[in-house]
Image (cartoon, rainbow, N blue to C red):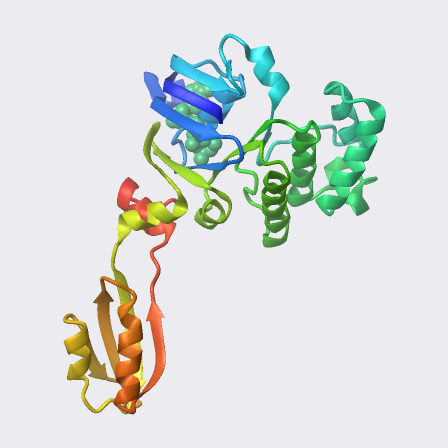
Length: 321
Ligand SMILES: Nc1ncnc2c1ncn2[C@@H]1O[C@H](COP(=O)(O)OP(=O)(O)OP(=O)(O)O)[C@@H](O)[C@H]1O
Ligand SMILES: [Mg+2]
């Protein structure tokens, strides 16, 4: 079941004077379909169009061309319907009143969202505990750290129990602990509510890889790849670079009989260091039994896995940072 769909979606802006004026094409011909139950990631460098896409889907911006549907509703026409189904959290947002406490702020939001009092109270306390923020519930928001503030924003977003939640860089600038809590919450939430949908943007490759079922890589307003993390990594290599260090191997040339491209040299400890590229990982088993037959001893075998970073560099022509 589709929960978000865009059809030839484009958006332009008048460039700011300080950027030299003219037209900025923030999104170009973006057609994507996101299913219920998915954690869908949008990965791209600064200025790629990630926030523009999220803002259109949240009805904060109109498309210049093309269509976008959220929960089956047209974001341009049925924006009120869309608004009932969704919520949005941006990293680094400073919502709420600094003079109010965490709980008072969340209570205020629950009233803006028309959540009945009893349910709101229960929800807020439960979420405060899940985000490990319960101890801070009576602290004024202006005294909170960035991580604590972002946890509060997340609680604000999730307390309406949205059908679809949009998270724009939810862990931007947070430490390992706060990021971990937020990521775990997101995966748990989808696990418990498989009919919901998460669309998130991120700069962090590891985050996209860990969380997302599918990832759209966007650059310069255009979707240049859309795949599962595993398939994205297959784009960079179908081969496996290996090194193997072994001692007591009498006939290293036998390794070359197994793997034509194997090379080796002796290291300082007198062990042999083999380098090879395998087209098929299953050959490792043969390699190991061959060394054992030779009465050799394998010190280690290392394989470098392709990373999303490799994919990104190959597709975009530069790294993310
Ligand atoms: N209101 C606006 N007026 C003019 N240009 C804008 C406006 N909003 C976005 N842009 C431009 O559109 C392009 C896409 O911006 P967007 O904020 O969507 O990128 P992003 O991928 O979210 O980047 P970041 O990683 O920095 O958050 C950029 O070139 C940006 O300068
Ligand atoms: Mg952005």
